[in-house]
Image (cartoon, rainbow, N blue to C red):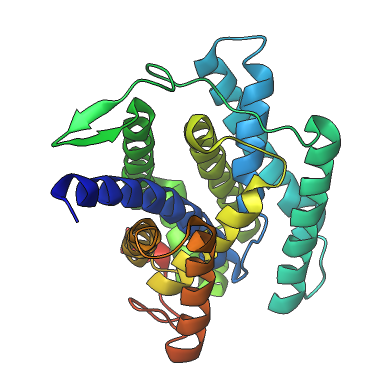
Length: 296
């Protein structure tokens, strides 16, 4: 295999892996605050992309993306206020089932609002035919936007948890929710913020990847599955593991094209998920008790 081709696979793997890592971190934020897995996380990416596409017809692209992120984060807050908080002494399984149901409802609502057409935002820089040469490999300028925005989100998230009062309160809730409540922290508000934060991250990621992957009403489902796989691979609740796991999954998918037909690409993630659940359910970099917020 030529060096240029290997580099092309690596760049593709890093791009996809960064997206999967962002989805996985969204899973971890909610998981550490509530103890549940929010299977509607993939729909946040879809909502962000589709909302930005609709708003971009009436306003500049940066404003459309900003409002899409705000609207999606409010949708995340509504999920907590309307559904999660109303559950009386719910089990973890019950809350997971609720998020699965919400995922289906959001997807069907998106189908009625935007129909089945595939849409996409315009390229932030250049166009579809514009490419940048890196040591013989070619990438779209939008890939640099994906890598830059995803990296910036992870950095800002780390600073938020480490240096802000709200972030420290969320870290306290992740360590011991009962003790945090006794210290005067409103744990209910922390749960709401966790849903808003994960929704905002998903929406922004959905906007950035839309020019490359395109957006459809059901496009969040596959991303949710891959993000969940990455979260399990890295160790549920471990943000460092999510980044490493995302890059690993992205690389495996990218290089699998050289030996397997393209149709088998999505099956790689499912196969890895099944293997992890059988061999090491706690993941490669952590255990169930580890907190993602502590990693920051």
